[in-house]
Amino acid sequence: MTIDVPTSRSDRSLPQLQPVSFIGANGQPTDVPTDGLRIPSDRTLLGLYQKMVQIRRFEAQVTHLTRQGRLATYPSAAGQEAIEVGATTALAPGDWLFPTYRDTAALLTRGVPVTEILSAFRGDWHCGFDPNEYHTSPAATPLATQTLHATGFAMAAKLKGEDACTLTFLGDGASSEGDTHEAFNFASVWQTPTVFVLANNQYAISTPLREQSNATMLADRAAGYGMPGLRVDGNDIAAVFAAVTAALERARAGEGPTLIECLTYRMESHTNSDDPTKYREAEEVEHWKQFDPIDRLEKHLRSAGVLNDERAAEITASAEELATSVRDAMNTEAKVDPSELFDYVYANPRANLVAQQAKLEAELAAAGRS
Image (cartoon, rainbow, N blue to C red; front, side):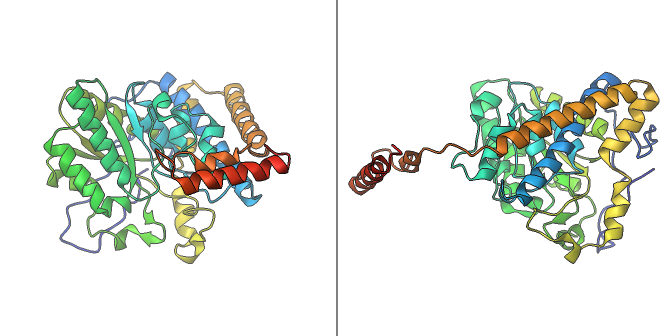
């Protein structure tokens, strides 16, 4: 079964190519050319399946917490787990990840604890975790800024002679930003070890792809910068993992950056404050459900004999344990030190700021809260 590729408004665009895919929506091997990529072993795929199941349950739990007022606005990546899990798993421990606000699944895959990931959605002033500990940058909210960060970091690593690649995610909307094109050009000119993973989920908030770009394939943009570009089925985690693995191998060999367009669909709203029924039809969402990344991989693993009911139940139980830990953590009031308000404002605090801090501390002491 093949994915319906969105069409362009122009007949002048390049031909549409079926994305690289190993596993079809029915769980069976596809007959799509795989560009020489190596399919991961079923053992590797089983581990990826478990991570996706856990993250799908995590996403559902977080959505419930936002509705309960325990967390602020949250951008779900449900349906896009294959891209984030597959790409992030391909990274080496010494590589660096540069995520966006929607890439919570990538942070979980990278090993960042749930409490540290979600602290930002509770209003904490910091990103919630130490970037150096997980080789992961704080998630970027402004569109496309992370592409520049990933490129610059990779350039620095190259100059220092470090064996480190960078990987960054961006969406179809961010691909139209000027920062993205600057990053593509710089990365290609200086041959930085950078992998750009473009999650084409068909919408930039409420703007469909056909109104964002007149190109049929966003991966074609790579040619304009003199770097390889590849389009893969973003709902086939085997294809994502294989493509990113190959791109990282190129980067480590000094062959520069790669752009990988992952064709997928945003199953949920842009954030929990968005109403997607105002700009897309229910039939469209139903159509894309048949390409669900978890369902197709489960069919494949069962067919291959590496997943049975008992193992599936164990994986589901582990996902429930994760959801429970999220509930327990987020239903506990965060302990906030009011004095943190004055930290990191100035290297050398000004007199008025010192006076304000002293006044606050005096008031807290008088209230017995010092």
